[in-house]
Amino acid sequence: MLKIGVLVSGGGTNLQAVIDKIEDGYLKDCVISTVVSSRREAFALERAKRHGIPAVVISKRNYPSTVDYDKALIAHFEKYGVGLIVTAGFLTILGETFIRRYSNRIINVHPSLIPSFCGDGYYGLIPHQKALEYGVKVTGATVHFIEYETDAGPIILQKPVYVEEGDTPESLQKRVMEQAEWELLPQAIKLFSEGRLVVEGRKVRILR
Image 1 (tube, helix red, strand yellow):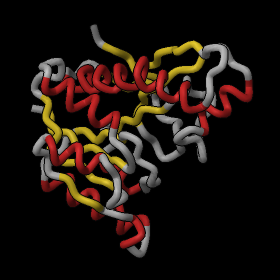
Image 2 (cartoon, helix red, strand yellow):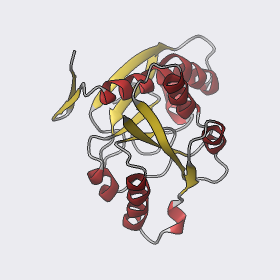
Image 3 (cartoon, rainbow, N blue to C red):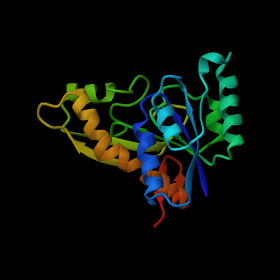
């Protein structure tokens, strides 16, 4: 059984996508053991509560340093025996101590086709706004392993989403979530749980 810990900061739509895929049997032998939010007002906490998932708030502002914050997160996830960390709309920067502890065991979904529209400051509506400003015809989502540099870890999966005439950042965000993020994140978790992801330098090989 793969025990998953999910880090959230907002509404938790990607968290819900994973919950749904566990409950419908797509993600066999997987369980969300705990949800950790950086913000007390995050609606993701309510989603966790509705599905009986232990959820807590661990805010970076309550710790004197990033290292202390990392240690608090590690202690929490070790308490629940977590084997995979999923960042699902998590807006707090993780430190090197945490990333090293869970090397190649932290996955993130980003709302663009990395390496486009990613890196520091590219979160929320911003990647979609920049995609529209640049005039690209295709955007999408990427699931990748997290490394210390923002959005720079090995890519696991990507899916394109076409930009439509009249799109706003909000409409594009919604379509990227529905058509790409909610599909890719559970798929990546499934591959991980089945031991089918092999990191080879900057690349991820998927075993058939």
